[in-house]
Image (cartoon, rainbow, N blue to C red):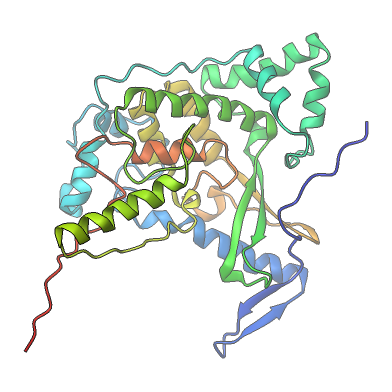
Length: 359
């Protein structure tokens, strides 16, 4: 069978620009091993970006969102947590993790028809899985009912009983150029996951997004993407209305734009697990999802091939991130931001504005 050429978003990385230790200038690195060494160090620092949170340094460190501490937070209890290390805003966040009483449990079951329907609609040009399997293989399996039945069982059973396959733990990090120059400070990590795992996650997480918005009468504050029927113009209009209100009411205003840099790579897995369970995602689905994230073995891919060194929690300690390329990323970001009216985890620190004084 001839496979179609996989589409690429940018040329493969073949060299690197890094800061010279003796000056502020950038110098070019072309040796393959040196490139990998720089990228491993840089990517590990990105994946540790969310560990500075005091919440992760507490009893949730190393948790998958399934521990006794997580259960207490979901029940609305913060007993057993040293609150002296948290400020008022962080304590309010802990309290907001309590599970709402009016949200029914999400349907976490997937079957052969769900898998077949999703694969039939997925483009064959989707990037290859780390194992080398492509959606061309999966589409071919659709033609044989017996093979499709076995294939769907391999996807359905782990999510039904709350475990992850070893093959799903292998991912590949592709470095995407934000500009034409391969500046190490301007690279974006795109993580490739196994196609069958990502397909199941996407089926379930799409269902979660529908589940969230079905229960909400108002949209989640500050989140405009990944919503069916949503538009990027809604974000622009909300800002315009904000400006208009300030001008008409003559109210002093300050705007602070914060770029959520590498946001998916900074999501702490324990917090992701708690927030997904908070929205009544079944424990078996959350367990499979977080176990796969914790056990990841990350390769780095450039034009010269794959790195010999891998990035794992076993070697580098606790790491964050669901991965830019994980089908569960958007829904997880929504789950972290969905706390209902009265609490917005994405709101900026209040800034008091004073009118200027004239002498």
